[in-house]
Amino acid sequence: MPYVLLTPDGQISSLHRDPQPGADFMAPEDPRVRAFLGGGDEPARQFASLDADLVRVLEDLIDALIQRNVLMVTDLPVEAQQKLFNRKNVRDQMKNYSLQLFGSEPLGAKVDEVVPTDFGDTL
Image (cartoon, rainbow, N blue to C red; front, side, top):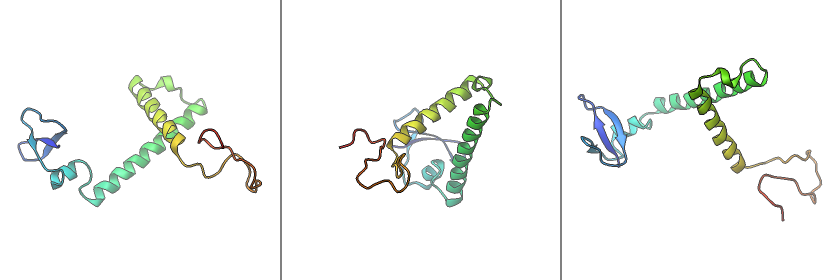
């Protein structure tokens, strides 16, 4: 890995794990591979991070509009519904593995009390 297909001007048009017809092997450290994967320069990484942040904002905005009955999820194209549901499922799965610093008990709970967590059965 990686095998690349190049445009006539030498730019990467696609990247593959396995050999493809017409694809050449290129070292993963090659600057063109890194740039194609978004790891080339700092401005590109910052822009990708901003895109990810904006996606989260839009996802939260859509959730708020749906909760307020301004928008119905069925108003969205089927492809958009599927993408939203897929992201929501992944986020929900990630939440199950995240560190819960605060339980449902109020601050100041007694030390000998068991504070419920999402980590399963308590000892």
